Length: 406
Image 1: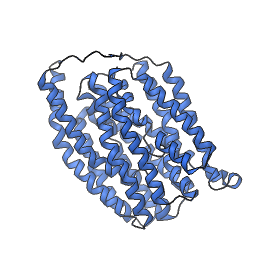
Image 2: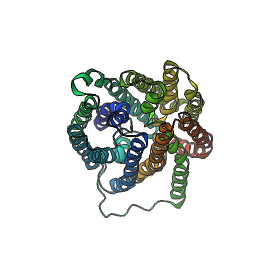
Image 3: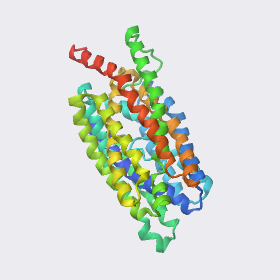
Image 4: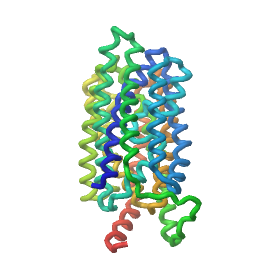
């Protein structure tokens, strides 16, 4: 494995620890400050919309320029936002840093709106046949870090006596600061093969290849709308949902989410192996179909223990295939379009995903605790049904080209 690949995988780990802590505790922290469910959902939605706006610009620009400076800028920005969050309870400033840095989204260690540059950089030294495995490893590493962070989310329970209910959450932003500071130093010394093209025009490509790539990207954008909305309805507010449904706090929720992340890491590694046996598309379809069935059952669970176990299994099946999906996107376009393709992939997820928390927050706040799950199951069921039909032909064509040495 190339040194740059190892460093990018390491950066994923350090970044994910703080993200894991905040996906458990951020909504609970805002609730402790007196925020209503609608307000919590809106600020998380705002972070998604800002991230989506930055995403496409960064992806396209990083294809023409270098990718490394964008990652360094992201790490520095998150350090600054974490410092502000540690020092204030102002609704204005907390909203600003949550929206800007994307805190609380549980991004599995990705670089937020700068992820297209990260994904394109990671692909540089990996042969196409190994991308499913390496991107699944990248996903697994992120979930391991998220699991550690989720365990750290129980820290406020030990600090509440000395710092108060809301004050006990604020030291968790120190985890974010530490992880991003380590990453800044780590990435500063990481080599990048991709060179700036400046104003140079890209080489013309055969029309058939251009049309095939464009068709793939349009299908991707359309399908991601279903998946993004489903993720937004259930992902960012799971800790809040557990709290409202079963009356539990971070000491109980943290270990459950940590367990879910750890199991998902194992599932991601298994999915990586599976991609080399049955292909990227079938791996995604199988995992997503199983996840939909468990999502339908989750709100019916009468006890926290049962709901927790079902949530862990559903997370493993559903999110364990993230690396396979990313590998398919990266492998379906040329190098000079990888940042743009990653941007479209993320953007088409983030816009509908940003709407989800506002809807889910309002529904949960009104006592409609099961509705977000059923809406999400309908959307993800549609996604799983259409994914294989949409992308299996592209994977077959890609495999045939590699077999012919193209």
